Amino acid sequence: MPSLGLAHRHLTGVTVIMVCGEMDATNRGQIERYLSEARRAPSDAVVFDLSQVPFMDSSGLHVLLTCATDCLRHGGAIHLAAVQRLPARLFEITGVVAHIPIHETVDDAVAAALAPFKRSL
Image 1 (cartoon, rainbow, N blue to C red):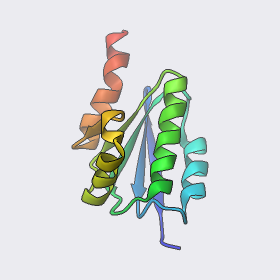
Image 2: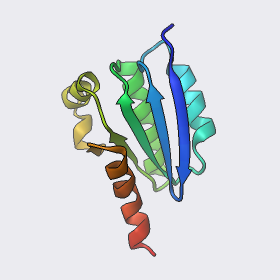
Image 3: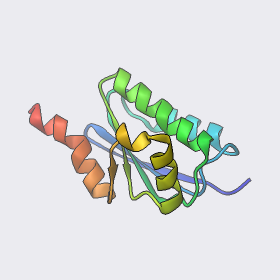
């Protein structure tokens, strides 16, 4: 099984998940378990830093869509950042780009995720 690195950091209202390695059927369960432990609150936004993800199959996409559905159900959202060419193509082909915001950088994604929170203050 290819090595997968996962890390996170918490900001007020946002959890940033850094993924390093391929997101596929071999590590879907590992990613799902990590997400359930790393997310602080169901209503928080989640930013996925995908800058170190060269490949993603439908299993990786499923993890992101499940997280997006859970976030939306609780009033949050997910944002994708620094997406590499092959995962970007998968998002384009499947139409994900119409439903989940994709940002050039993690900082841009965090700013977008925090924007609704700042407006409510």
